[in-house]
Length: 163
Image (cartoon, rainbow, N blue to C red):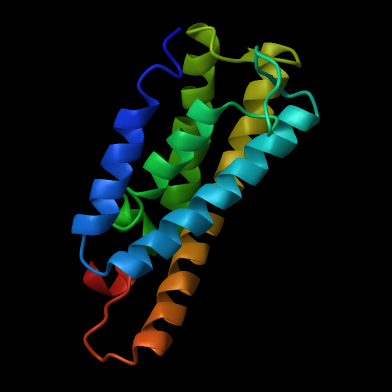
């Protein structure tokens, strides 16, 4: 259902975001690290049969559109989701609810099938997302700290300091 039809729009928007946002190299590093963490997580869940995606001949166990969604999500961490970088419990709670509901919506749209029964899958996803969101923000802060050391700038602010 149109999952791969407009991939080029998503790629163009992500590239534009990285080019036009301040601290482009730091943003690129945060997006890459976060997307990689999400891609690995979803790939493992697909390999263990939690997710089943239709289609064959894929390089990874998850489809290309889901990889792009991870890049798009990662581009929000230092901006619209920056508030959560100081509030790990809230990040965990919102991850448990929002992350899980996004996969339930994907199931309802027939983009993914759950390999387990519905409620065990929802519980598993809620636990994973409750852990994943704080870990993602810790990864972001680590990337920002490395960027600050590399840049050697006193004017560099991490996501936490911006708030």
